[in-house]
Length: 490
Ligand code: ADP
Ligand code: GLC
Image (cartoon, rainbow, N blue to C red; front, side, top):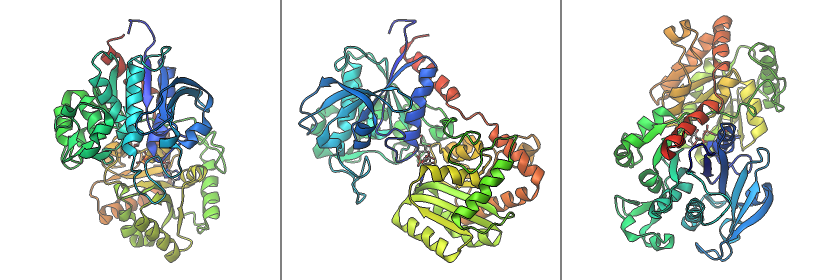
């Protein structure tokens, strides 16, 4: 692109809050483009036309009638605006592939959609056509920024089309989900067979969309610096650590921000009383209201902990279940909200039955309720086995709800443990533990109980937590410098 002209960036993703959300990816895809636009970039999104997207976007018009491809008879590329931010979003209208219930990735029984290769292959393919100035003569991106395996094929399609000048950036939000497909489906992608090799997309007898991003993106980012280091090791690399090490100079971590307008206790319409660091009385009102709402004992001395999470093995919530009897004896109240693996859902439901008034569990997804839990609790527990970034501990920081987290990935990068030195220096913002064992979690919780018994110490921790800079402005600046470096524009 010409020096001095506006940097055009296309974000390619499967989810965007509030239209489609299965996790933090949707929050990032909603907030980062807005923050980049505030930095002066010309940002657009490319999204699959899932029902909530087709229903939720505004002012859609056809950019190009693509016709039959990827197993669909009718494919159109639309240009619309997102509700709220009003950012322009290209939407792929392909009813045969996208117009269905269930999650974006699975049917209502939890089975991967059998045609995910076509559904997300098409997403990457259209991104490459936009980059090649093939789909919309009015707008050609300088940077194609693809998120997670769903969008990763964009990087392979762009790389395979020699004349496309766009720089590709691939962000790994979670390496554990890779988009693996059987070799016999390879021809459906229409890519050269030489890419079906270990130096291409081949992965242990299958092929991997994630690998397309890792191998072919000009630059790979992850959502925290610690996770960027971790995924280069066998422990966290999910079998792809070798590929990541081979890209060493082109992999970096940029910590996520949070939407600090949506997550702001001073303006939050969902909570019992608004508050900020100077007016913490409102937080006490939120705490009492939460105890009343959940049927928890109105106990001012309990350490009221919350969990708002997908209930999956990644999140280490089995540690909470294992430590629960000891935690309750120590004076903890626990409020859980989540959905996920049936065994974890059942175990938490049983914990509530066993400890009425001390444990409350809501199996379900509810944004407003998540705000009330985070505003009302004293602490938020995130004991993940791995955590690329994690957003809820940052919501906790902003709401003066101290995070209790495992020292891993983005949790390690966002929470400063209340050990002697950090505490003395006023830097501590929460409680961090190392071993993924119930005992280590229990000790961590006991330290929080001890800290809360000292009102001045707790208030100092809350003040430090609530003053952390967590907005998207800093991360957006980092992405802008990366884009400029890759496109060689000042
Ligand atoms: P992940 O993306 O791995 O699930 P993150 O912490 O990055 O973890 O993001 C999770 C997002 O989903 C947060 O915005 C969190 O508040 C939200 N969330 C998770 N489970 C629920 C739930 N049951 N109800 C409401 N929000 C939830
Ligand atoms: C993934 C990760 C989570 C991260 C989110 C947004 O879902 O599991 O740690 O915060 O993506 O980047």
